[in-house]
Every structure is written in C-alpha cells, then in structure tokens.
Image 1 (tube, rainbow, N blue to C red):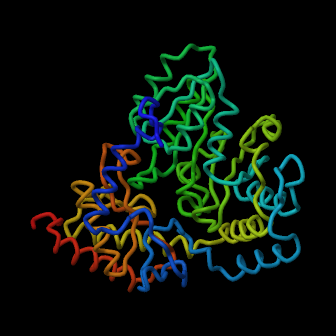
Image 2 (cartoon, rainbow, N blue to C red):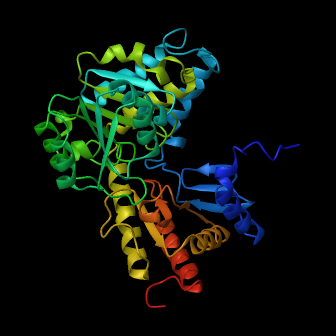
Image 3 (cartoon, helix red, strand yellow):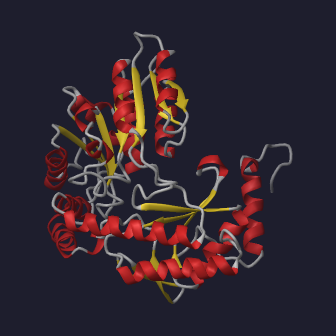
Length: 407
C-alpha cells in the first residue's frame, strides 16, 4: 500500500498517462504498440491479420531480406553460436567484429572504426567520452535524443543553436573561450522532417573556430551521396569531419552502431568509452549480416536510384493531394506529413492502418515545434504500384477526415 507522505516517483508521467488513457478509452488502437505478426518482405507485413504496406521502418535499402545477408547470418550463427556473452574488451571480440569494422573503414576511406551494440550507444559513448568538464558541445536544437543524452553524460557545457542556422552556429562558437575544447555535433538528415543540414558551411565555420566536428549520418548512410556515404560526402566535406556516427538499424538492415574517424588517438576510446567497455558485444550473426550488407551497399547505385524515384513520387503525390509536408522538396527518404494536432494525427494513423498502410506517428516532445507528424520512410523495394497505392490511400483517408488543403 502506497504511503501518501512519500512522493510518487511516477508523478512526473501523470500528464502522459492521462493523455494515453484518453486516447485508448476512445477505442483507438495504441499507435506505439503495433505488433507485426509476420514480415513478408521489406515493404509488406501482416498486422492484425491484415496485409499491410510498410512505410515506417527505416529499411531504406531493403537489406533485411537480401539473400546474401540472410545466408551470412545463418552461417555465423552455426559457426559461432547465438551470442558472445561478453563486452568487446574481454571475450566479446570475434573475427566478425573486426571484419565489420574493416568494411566500414573501406567504405568511408578512414583509418578507424568502432562498432557499438546500438546506434544510440554510439552517440552516447563517443560524445560523452571525447567531451568532458570544461569542454563545450555545440549542437543543433533538433538533435536526436541520443546526442542530447551523450551531451548530458559528458559533463561538458551544452550550447544549442537554432536548427540548420549557420549564422547562429557561428555566434555560439564566437562566444566560447578560445582555448576551450569544442565539439560541434550535427546530423546529415534530421529524422523528424527529413531535412538535410548545410554541412559544408557548418563544417567550415566549426573549423574556423578550432572545433572538432561529429556528424550523425544515421538517416543518410546508404541513401545520400555518390556512394551512399552520407550528406558529408554529398556536400564534399567528408574529409573535414572528425567523427562520423552511423547505425546498422536503417539502411544496413540489422542492429548496431558505429563511429569512424581518422584521429590518430582514436583507438584509445576502446578503453575509455564506458558504453563500449561495459556493454555486451553484438551477436556473431548480427555482425556477419552487417558486414555483408555494408559491402553490398558500396555498389548499390540502382537501389539508391529507385529509392530517390520513390521519394520524389510520394512527395509530389502527397503535396498535389493537399497535404502539408515537412519539406518543400524531397531531401531524403523521409517524408513527414504535418497533422493539425495529436488527436487528428492518431485518428489518421489508425485509419491508414485499417486501410493496410503503416506509417510512424511522431509526437511532441520528440518533434520540432510541438508538431504531430505522420512520418513516412521510403524503401528502394517499394514498387511504383505500391507508391501509387500509398498516395491514393492517404488521399482517400485524408479527404474523409477533412485534412486536405481546400477541404
């Protein structure tokens, strides 16, 4: 029995509990509790006994069902077992872990690579280790939660600036003491609206003030750039970036995170980075699938072309239907549809699901400017027919719910 005189540690969640209870009591399906009963392909799953087009999985290059990737995972599972039962610095480094790090070095043309158990841990570990007390981390206000958490864990001074604003970045850097350690953290593609950072300008400004630069390319790897190496490659500034963070859970099609760098002292991070030292390493089957996928992404020009064609077609179709989108033009594989409020967003999400279309519902505080978004993630394996069906489903449901401009 709860003592009324002892503060309830869950009290801070009361507004969230009330909001969720209100939505579910109205009979709506929980938008954050969807179960996929069976996954048929990178673009189709069975959800609630209904065949559903997947438009919210980050499976940008469709690698989850690639035959070579699956075969590599099976082989590693058979030869090395289900897991390592240890961290990388003890018994958790197998041949596959070194192989996937080597593939990353070759892909990006850099000297060093560290693989983490998740992309979240990669940001958490690298930022909190290289920035410390007395240092400054300057970051975009719309940065991912893993970046913010890495900053908090670092004990450094945190200096945010207005989203994608080069002038604001320079002003912040100009106010930091000249002799202080400075790390500028940017993202290539921002995950909520799918917009791209002006990296080349920002990296130039950062170097002008003696700052190191870390770029999170989670949503750009495999998708953006001549070889799919991200926005830094696309904007010709990859060589000026000190650290690139990425993930295996998007274009690579499995799970894990990484950091690559040319810094001559980089390898010491294997002993100093707590989220690396004190976490069990990825299972052999996972690193084997990641390694195979990365090597295939090096020569995946046709997949990238199809993905961009899909992105352009969906963006054009949704705009023509009267939806408000997060970007004026397609900038990535993410296309976000802006909803007027959370209730409208949940209702639209559920109606789309009933029509056999799954998208992500993104809500505050994760979204910029307290927006509610229906976030669509294209895949290279979406057919032209599927894209047309997605547009017609969105249009039909949006019109029925009076969510289109002019209706």
